[in-house]
Image (cartoon, rainbow, N blue to C red; front, side, top):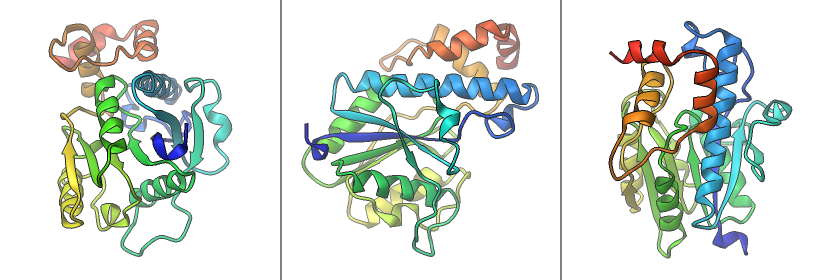
Length: 250
């Protein structure tokens, strides 16, 4: 299959190493535990992308930083997942700063490989419904220029898909604030792009959202079924944290 007929789906991630990964969960987790949980997330997110690829042409990637940390991903990714550097080091427009540099770098690198569409997804949503990934890739591979936005319930986004690496989507964004998704949508509309907005999902970046992940996995009913996140659930079970998360959710 030609690359232009494939959507690259890249997870924005750091290597799951103590002191670098899931630091907002320390405490109650130790740095070693947080790194192990981050590795479980990476396994589940990349396996979820591989599952989506059974329904629509997708190639899975991890867009990583910093350079030189490639070995830290060994054994933590779904088979066939490739790596692409996204440290924001190439020349960028002056108004693209912070995390936006890494996002734009990832998009530019993947489009340079010839892919017809690119989705950038976070590494903090291991239960993201597979159908959201399928819908995003299928929509982007259809004819016509557009953007796909997956808003997170904290005001950010868990997915941004595009058919060209539009720098304005990443310019003058106040990253890590509640206005990121709204600002990105406004930028896309200002560029004259149609925007498909996926259902809202959530990031797992603190103890309460980790508790929500477990509760949703066990109890959630509805049209959008969470990905079962087996690696994450195995880690939770093996570390005896189910009761602590139940208590945190109450």
